[in-house]
Image 1 (cartoon, helix red, strand yellow):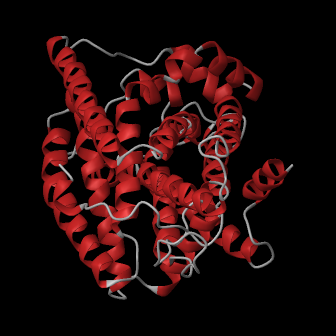
Image 2: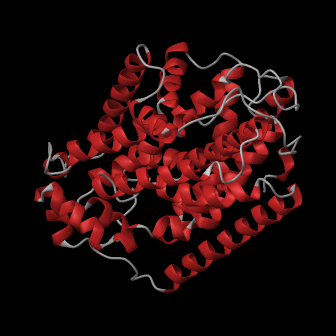
Length: 411
């Protein structure tokens, strides 16, 4: 599927200095493979890509917050937007659903590869030296899940990173075997789920009135208790998509080592090929599955969307290479990318306060207001994050949560 444009290079390429949290985990690789050699400057492309992935993930999550029943509604199979009667909402969702999340997962794999390179250059034991970072990320994700959002991605990333970190000390042949085996098993599982949905059209149903009332009128403690009581069900997504997570992490490793993010002619050619293959194959397949209806949701979100995500990575790179990305947009995405962990948690917290009854209660008040207020909420939260991140970085080198993580790991 991706063999046409990824060619691994020397595994020893490193980064300028040891990365930290989500927002500091993607550094520029070195031009030379020798340990301790002078590194190149930080790659602006990675910050822009990470910022786009964070705001793009919000394009999907905002609909979950805005739906009556929120997280529980998503699990019950809330109806998708009809492209014929609700074209604006359908296009908005199609552009984002599953794609930016896959994009963020690939970038996590890139960051893990750079951390491995840094550890090898410093002589730090691997993966033993990386485990505290992954465990801290797991703790952060657990708190985020309990206190804010049932569909946290950090927990799944932390567990996947612990596995993939061990694979980085193995041969390229072993990593390639694990990568494609994971992809094959994942596609088979999504196909089986799709077949079961097609065989039983009655699967899924209405959202319970209790869940709707909980998010519309329940207290914060009530919602925390609900997530804890239903933790197994709410954590099913990273379990079902674990094969995809492993594949995308390893794909990120391959892309990094192939030089796909370097400011070189080779890197620019790779990005153009990623855009062509990813969008050329992924968009038609994803569109066909979306038009197929709710029964094809799993194949669309977890199989076709990741292909489009590779196209997005290449497309944004091409736009930046050719100077077609407006400077204010580039600066805003860079600021969000450098504070990615803080912005990821902050965007979900802001949506919770805006949509749930414990805050403004917009999900209930504007339930019949159409899709425009939801898209407006995404734009407002995105603008808030860009502004806050830009102002914060004028005084501090790292985001607030990134600083907490650095201090904790240093101790």
